[in-house]
Image 1 (cartoon, helix red, strand yellow):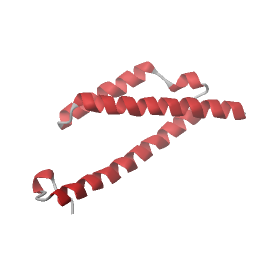
Image 2 (cartoon, rainbow, N blue to C red; image 1 turned 45 degrees about the vertical axis):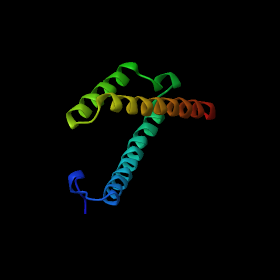
Image 3 (cartoon, rainbow, N blue to C red; image 1 turned 180 degrees about the vertical axis):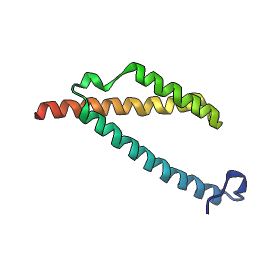
Image 4 (tube, rainbow, N blue to C red; image 1 turned 45 degrees about the horizontal axis):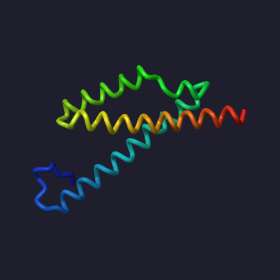
Length: 102
């Protein structure tokens, strides 16, 4: 049974809900990473791993969506910037490794 924050009366109930959300977040990040991995397969060179306009677009969209959801836009932007930086590094390494193997 899922509880809204206001419906939680104990710390254990809150921890249970946070753990539930963490499982969902991990699953969503894993799904997202599948697309990042596939993108690395489609890009021709490591230089293609970063598209500054796309990064800005994603960060702006995430910040706007966070704000609408009542979540700190700056924190959302920071979290996604770190995620994107990691994804870019992964893509560069994956593309370079693929090119070396070919």
